[in-house]
Image 1: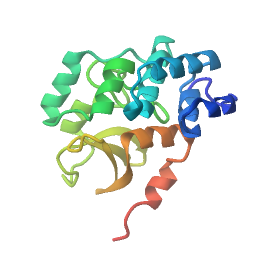
Image 2: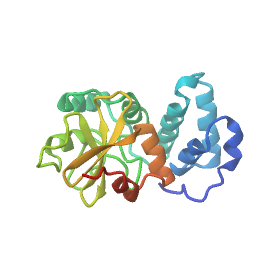
Image 3: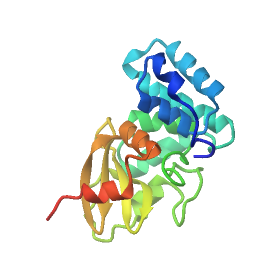
Image 4: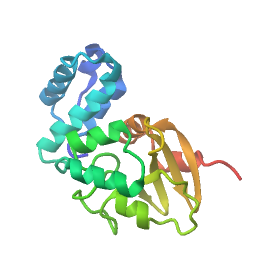
Length: 206
């Protein structure tokens, strides 16, 4: 993301959250003063159960306000996507779309959003892609929603059947779970630990 590389994030180690959370905040392009604003706002929510999730949402929301991400989605667009897909959005993805940005965050050009978000390639949003996506074989199970194109027919998907938003990968007609949830996937892609190579290496051997 713009401006995220090379920032000194180590002073945040004493703030009570893991280094990987600080990396996420830095990599979405926030200046150090805004990073602290995120931390203080989330600490003020008194919600330790969802502390890491709240950090992600608040960081991306402020990045969107700064013009580096698209504006949030409308509730109507989210509802329309859920109607097409037939499953509700996992809570974290719903919060990110409605409170932070309608796509555009994550690796490379970011993930796709719902209606009204930025178009990526031939696809306008996750609902359109779910209907007309690149799976002529029909092997992708219902409820697995494509959200990010890595190129070379490699896609990341979110399992809408599971509120935790378990991540899957598909490549050349094969689909498999990644062993992580959406929150971990976002952190990993921004920190550089979830890569195309890592995805391919996790593919089960037939």
